[in-house]
Amino acid sequence: MALKIDKKYFVVFGIVVVATLGLIFLQNSFSGYAVLELNADYHEGEILDGVLELSLNKGEFIPASTKVVFENSEERREFDLEDIVSEESVEGMYYIEGKNLSGEGVGYGLMGTKESPEISFVFNVSSDDEEKITEEIVSGDISADRPLVYNLEEGQTAELVPGSVAIGSKTLNDEDIDFEILNGTVFVSTVYFEEEEGFGADYLSSKDDSGDSEEEFWVLEINLSALDLNFSAGELKISFVYNDDEILSLSSVLQESDIVEIEEPVLLEVSEFSSQGLTEDERQILVQKFGDVSVVTTRSEVLDGRLIRNYKLGDYELVASYDYDLDSLDEQMERDRVNFLRDLVRMISEEKVISEDVGEFLVSSDF
Image (cartoon, rainbow, N blue to C red):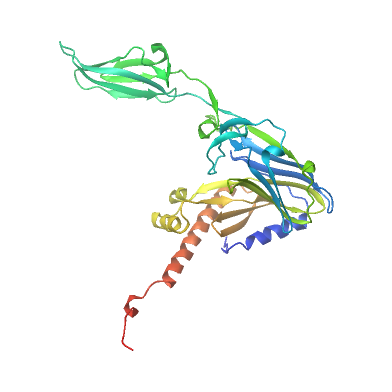
């Protein structure tokens, strides 16, 4: 598949397709990132009616002071999130997976759970002689899925320090861990676990051993009809902004139709591509050019059985089309991501050659 790279012009293509079809329906599978979904009924000259939904994974938490911005070519309307939702705000640590969001305060989200906390303990290692001289104190941490193995030297033995088993400042019973010595090796394990609730990366839903997703999404609804939004037909962008940083955004086209639009960001770190076809030199060229940024997919939609998907890095964008029912769809998308990055490397390298200094002509002369 030959795909040309250019700056930004692919976006125009996407908008034209949407405007022609009128009805937009995107089939996305949730990946764990926050998702915006617009379900609206638009008639030009009338108030926009419908619902804007923000789906958060358990463990994600968005600030109540987040700005919700609606804008098109003619008008911009801005609201505080806490003023346009009916949900009660709670205290927590701000976190949206894949976003640079930090701080704590009031906001919205559903606490996730963290299991199998680390259990700390201490044991003495001593020489096996008449004086039983203690040589060092060893401390360790284990969890239900991570035991500890410690090799003793010849003539050494070990003994758990009574009362040293704990989770943080909470003391547990010594029997909550298994402390065994076998053939000169200390084995420490446990089946003990607790569930702790909170917000952040450690509290996100995960996948079980079978690979089935255990993610549970919590939906925050915004009633659009209560916002008195009256936009002219054309592109509408909805953004969630906190501290001048865009957390999430969704672009749609307003026209005489029902609108169903979903925007789900998928982040792919540049560093990951070193193991997917790029050499280390190629990866370094990208890092030097773009810094610590990510390849982002901001458009993913099914139109007439074709998946239209983009890949963006900085100001550069690639839009590709795929047979949505193709068995090798994931492989094709992966190949296009790598080819997109490799084309960028080639372009950057050519720019460097064109602008290369020619030292032999850097001389001075008399008038």
